[in-house]
Image 1 (cartoon, rainbow, N blue to C red):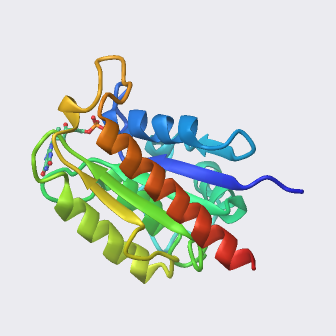
Image 2: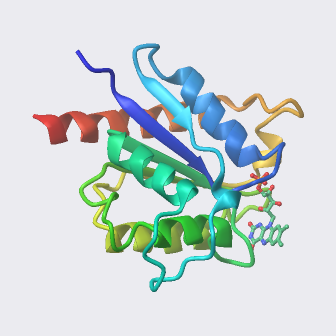
Length: 181
Ligand SMILES: Cc1cc2nc3c(=O)[nH]c(=O)nc-3n(C[C@H](O)[C@H](O)[C@H](O)COP(=O)(O)O)c2cc1C
């Protein structure tokens, strides 16, 4: 039987990104039978231009990975009350080709502030509605004060957060299994 494929995408390019560490932690929580990959290379995408029709290698790789994945998990910081441009740019490249259509998603924002990146999260959820993804009221999470919940090495130290992430993952897996029923 084919293993479940989950593609994780971080909205931060920072080498020591807390958002990427969160995705790694979710990957460690996932059952070993799940193929859990973190997408790398968002910074190699050209700026989105709807008039450009020819294939770009990075964009094609991204589209293929999304198409092949059974579910997607995004974890992103908020920049200036919005979604990081690098992430929005990548999502814009999929609007006309529709890889996210009917795709189960989980959406997380994390911030050192006590607002938890809630405005970026709300904006991203709107984009995912526009893209036709599958999600419900348990598909998203805003994580405030992340610096107090993660070690310098990037390990989660907050038990409540670990449980919240397990719930996000199990809800995504449920959405995936309902889709394939
Ligand atoms: C240019 C810039 C703008 C930022 N704007 C916000 C913001 O609007 N809201 C917020 O919660 N954090 C903001 N931050 C702080 C980020 O949440 C913080 O740097 C976070 O650790 C980035 O995520 P990362 O660790 O995954 O890279 C901003 C940071 C930068 C560099």
